[in-house]
Length: 60
Image 1 (cartoon, rainbow, N blue to C red):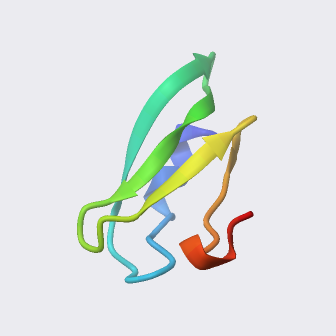
Image 2: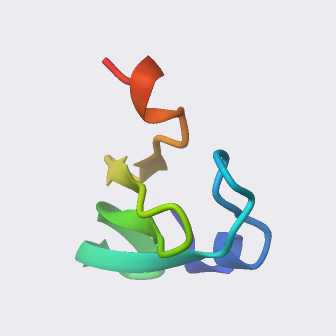
């Protein structure tokens, strides 16, 4: 996931702002990490550069 996406991403549950937490980064790509919403306290994982923004009940 490119960091520039943070400008357009919002929490899918409450539409609040997301905070990026980077674990592994390669150049401009975030390979592993998470997106966190302080408003509803949900976290969304980033695996293999792909953010999973599905609601928690729908994640497998």
